[in-house]
Image (cartoon, rainbow, N blue to C red; front, side, top):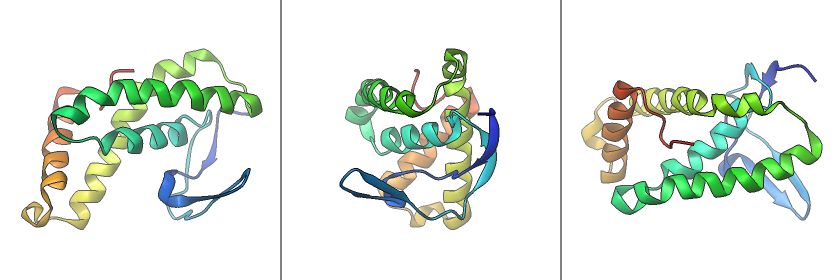
Length: 140
């Protein structure tokens, strides 16, 4: 398998269905050429898992949730695909990229940020701070 190609680009629980052991992925409107591991799709799942944790309690849980998710996810992923461990070192960069994509998408859909609910306003403020500081949403 190569390291770059067409990926889904928006893997999260809203874009898949599970029927027993079968998982069906849909909503391919964000397909893109990106890296396989697929770091982009793995990080998208990871990002959407942790970005829903808001407030002080959420910030405390993000890293433990991210590490727990990755441990189980990568064990299953490696049953089908192999990759070099060096790719895992790039997860923080891909998390920052996902944050930019989500931030731009939310801004595009809600240019008047005052119309966002409290969670949305908090997310936009926190994301803007993380992006300005060059920090990923979780340090993993």
